[in-house]
Amino acid sequence: MRHAVIATILGCLWAGGAAAAPERRCGWLANPSPANWWLRDRDGEWVLSVQGVGREPVPGLDSLPDMTTLGWVETNGPHGYGCACLILDTAPGGRVVRILSGEPLPMQRCRADRTLPPPPG
Image 1 (spheres, helix red, strand yellow):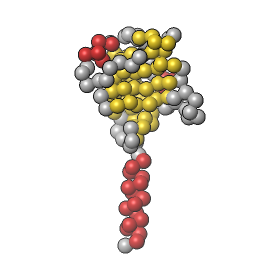
Image 2 (cartoon, rainbow, N blue to C red):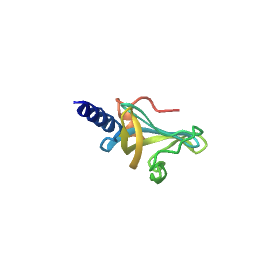
Image 3 (cartoon, one colour):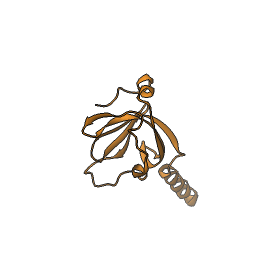
Image 4 (tube, one colour):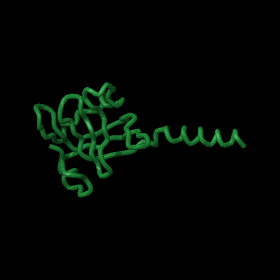
């Protein structure tokens, strides 16, 4: 009986730490300043990189295509925001584990989506 309880607890802990299936998330991709990146969609904010917190950016961030090709609002030199979809591996609690791919979208797509928050900036 004791072994069954321990096995159940360990199984729950292992399942809780595993990444979920890849998700397609679309919304405002923000880069307001160097090394700060996040995606805001209908469900909230997905942090991709934070400057100066002692952790590396989410794997895959550096392999995203040029997100400025279909519109980009500059708010701080070349930094700003655009509309994009990203394929993400996530973990419980809304943490991004890895970016698998991404694509820029026309700005009007995000502006027309009533489920999104207002654009950053």
